[in-house]
Length: 363
Image 1 (cartoon, rainbow, N blue to C red):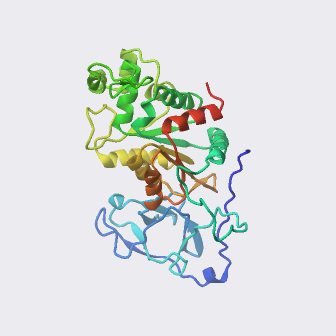
Image 2 (spheres, rainbow, N blue to C red):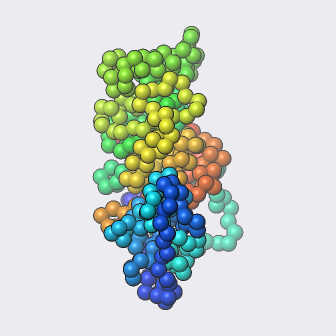
Image 3 (cartoon, rainbow, N blue to C red):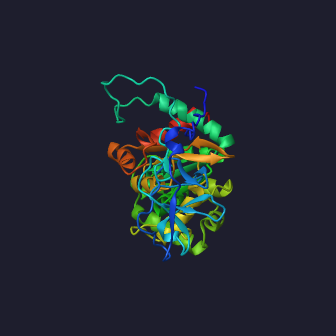
């Protein structure tokens, strides 16, 4: 299956309904971090704003934020907490252009004939056949390796198995990963796997529990904290494998964001959730493909930062988003939380990663 980038069809602003549309109304921020009443909240879709006779696309966006008009007339999309006094916030709650705001929900649709009104198995579940999805993903990743920016969002289950851990390491080493977003647990158990060959005290191949294995992850945490950083721990203890090892070796950035459950944590973990969010968004704002695996909350958090499109060299293209989990509830909850463009795959994460590794022909 050869990859073909979906074409974007921009709105036809010569249409009569747009000709009669008014221009946007703005109001200045009076207090840092507080939007004026009747602010317009952004979505995952491309949004255009009518200003000075032109319809202007917000080139970077995320849902549940506000649109701010910069001094040069371009549109910035900002979180409420980042608003500064005096910034001009777009007002309006309609999306049809009548208030100078148009949300373009169908830009990547082919316009082909629809299917039957009634059909079986139109949802995504453990009964879905995913062969075509895998084939599309292999070709997408080959394209993105050369032309895109792929962000992987990972839960600790990704390192509980030797084969999935090796598969992810191979993806990093071969250039299919541009950034990793995760929590303290992913990093800790990955380094535990490198140091003790266990995860939460169980052998990562046989799954057998080791004597005093429940100490392993906190022993590793203590050693990394003594070393002062993950990179220094890898050097101090001559670590030779794993996901964080592969990231360090191949200069792939990783962002570990903390939670209230964390042990340790690792020195690199962002304890302030907004610092973590800012650093996650630094890479999400570049992402052309996002793959969330076995982490419901972290994937939802990333999904809420990820628009359905990206502007690359003045060309609008889709942002591909995958959510992979063995739980139907987990992948469907992401869609319920607003990430409507997500492709869901219900499967064991070990099988998914090994399939991707083999589908790409990686050793």
